[in-house]
Length: 146
Image 1: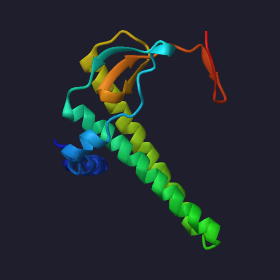
Image 2 (image 1 turned 180 degrees about the horizontal axis):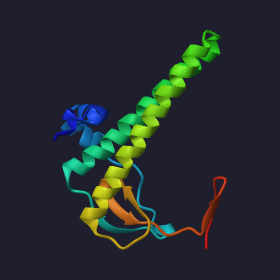
Image 3 (image 1 turned 30 degrees about the vertical axis):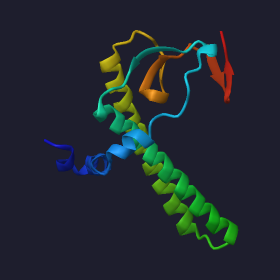
């Protein structure tokens, strides 16, 4: 069975099918390796299939941002309706859920390729996979380091 045959995952097949070679270059992670905070390279994503998952996550993020800006304009203009707000909220939730699902697939695929024993990894510019130092905890957006 193919993704396209699964109605519940057709959106993913469509998103992956819409990617181009340029997407794999233009949607490369932008964040630099932060060696001053203990990040170190443990591998590299070479598979275009895995890179494609990252590109879908990036596209979904852009779509969420666009949707929020459009909805914000309605509020600024005072032309939004309750229906507009409900529809915008539901579409944003759908995009967030889809992004989370693709992110899970992406990290599972990266872990299979890298075969790392690190608890926390990240993706950086140049498709580099880095180990990220563990943090003791997080409290309302404030990071607590051990």
